[in-house]
Length: 115
Image 1 (cartoon, rainbow, N blue to C red):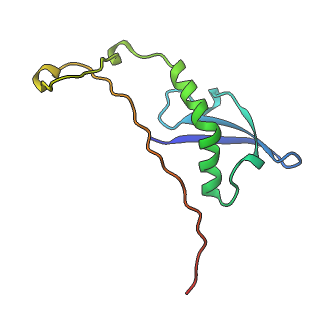
Image 2: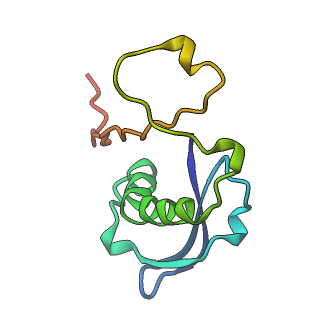
Image 3: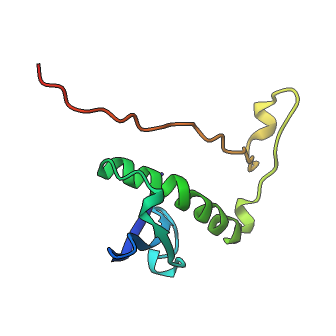
């Protein structure tokens, strides 16, 4: 799953951007997300990749988590956690919820080396 953002305005005199965040597979368009002003001085502007990664890591993830918590859970998607001894036959037809475990990943900055 991808998170997305759209820069709506760039203010070069203050080096800041107005940006909206959303999840790619969201049922809501990115236009419904609340815009936020971000100071580019707080971002990694080494390359386009590091810029996008630092923007999402520093500002997008928190906003998307808040948006996700506000979204209603459909009654047919409400599940329960399981524990104890495994009984696959007893799980047939039940909705089971499992907490997401975020992976820690970072972009490595490298420069091209010509031999």
